[in-house]
Image 1 (cartoon, rainbow, N blue to C red):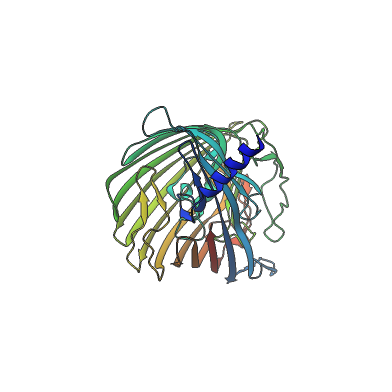
Image 2 (image 1 turned 120 degrees about the horizontal axis):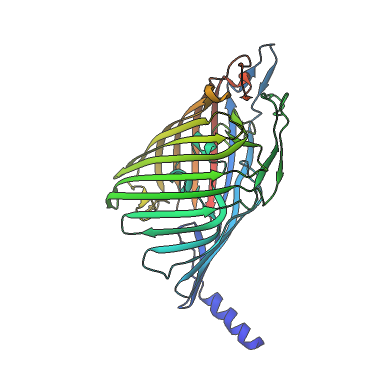
Length: 436
């Protein structure tokens, strides 16, 4: 038995080739006819500084976003592979607690692909369907942070569940049912209508959150994509996503909010709590086009949060549009079967250079529901250098603006964000990304 184990170990080690590119990242890859095993991960180190970062209160006191700083935005390791012809798996672990998340498993699922060609049945913790930008790996997006509208994805991202996808050469249909995430946050108490910007605690409200895997939240998520035009460097894409979420009785309030487009800052300028939520429905319409080194993409998200006790429905929305151009001529790598962009291909000996520009907006105000979380928009310009398949350096400059928060508490308000956040903010940040 011991000799057999040694022979298997030697065979496995001898099957590992040099570093090779995979969909997720660059990995060590062992493979034979019966199985394949990949090991890899990412390190993303961020550095940021802020300009016009102070917020002036009516009484003259001042606070700000914080000093320049640095964080490990992501530090992940994953293993993925297949057993036999029809079974696949992936486990991905996050070691950092930045960006609003916690250390722990991100992807944790296995999948069956033997039902019919193009079909995948996935069970475990995986991404729901929200936007193309959310489904893309952070390794592959052209900006350091996703757009402001991701603040509406509080009850999406990765969750435990079952999803089924069916794809052809240029289309995909997906449907999934999801429960809690492995690191679910449950908002168990809610009262009051205001918050304090300086301390990031509530002056009138009493809100607490606890970690639980029995929140009672469930989501039904669907996606449809179609690329009527596809060849390498020549793409046209349309997609739509639908999500319905039901809230359990433990959730006295639903939360939506986002930082400015940096994770180094800890303050959420746009934030809204919706009391007594019963369900939410959101939809996404998105499109993208690639013409040689030029690409264009955009999405619109609308959301309605229904409430119990006869309270009015709360409605929010957001959108973004962005363009990028690869100075060294490579087109963005679009995958029509998934409706996603992956890492740049054909990187030459001197690397590849890419410039990008994005405008995005998020509205967390609904006067009819008495919610005033604010309206925010941002213009972000970026330049990226792909040294090779493993290393990318990114530099982003973002100008953000927040308005729409009333200077005094409105009559009938059920949530009122701090009016000191009606301000401008300029952010300069840098990322070093290493895939292994």
